[in-house]
Length: 209
Image (tube, rainbow, N blue to C red):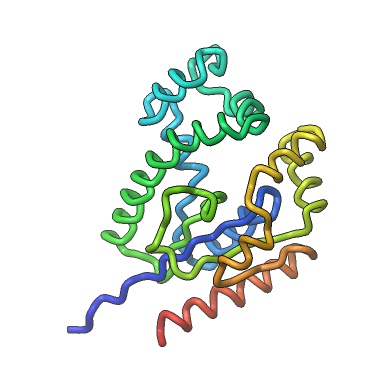
């Protein structure tokens, strides 16, 4: 009986505004299984989530909406202005996200796993919770000015806040040095899609080797 082949479990990261979400969606369309750390983060921060009470204790009830949900935009403005507070939030949220990732990964692998599973994690290299099971690591990168413009359009925020958000993350060149694969997203969507399709095929071939 042929031994069941394990899926490739790759990490996908990139600075804010680099386009990693677009890359993830293209990989999903090609057949990859996607686990998104931002989605997991929202779950652990929800009123019934595992990090909710600790966040309220650390940051107070002023960060709550009238519904009782955490106002992520308000919380973001607080932590992106203060590196100590940002680290405090990350110490609460990241371990909970890590546990939920392990659960989701096990569920995918125990069902009918796709050949490739992608974990989309913005702070892959910044996080204290390392992910040794992710191989290869894939970085999406774009020029800083392009990332800033994208964040301003997406979040409806000022350039100053967009710059602070980008500055709070590891510089792209340092991330590139730590990554196995780099996708440069500095052109059209058609160019990006071609690069992602090539990446997907290369991953499939490496799994078959």
